[in-house]
Length: 157
Image (cartoon, rainbow, N blue to C red):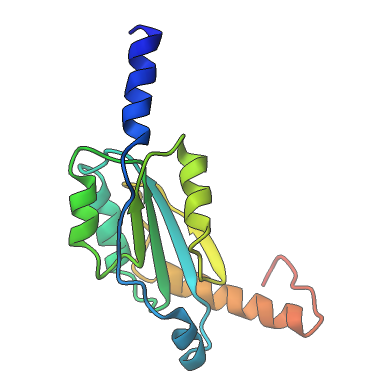
């Protein structure tokens, strides 16, 4: 492919406007009524309509209530954006626009983080068990309370 064709494709992609959606929960209200930490999950996607359902199902099955899920899509053209829109109730915030790669997408997503902890999960990846985030949150809360008390937790906690 010639350099001018690559440049034209890049220019066309960069002219695509941001699409966005999600339920955008009021996380300040959640903080007022819960002492559990908010865990933000960031997933970057690009043309992953055939694999994203694994991640959607995995997060949907989690027993932990305080999950903020942000998806940064790189202007997919394969139906991924429609899948994001169909899952607005589960996804806190998603956007689709051109990016320069996974790190650019993650950095854009970080601007929307409301959680106390951030986890990056790839499109198509799954959490190990339905209570994985519940276990993680309880462990983090325990260690954080020890840190606040001035006790550095040992590696056996």
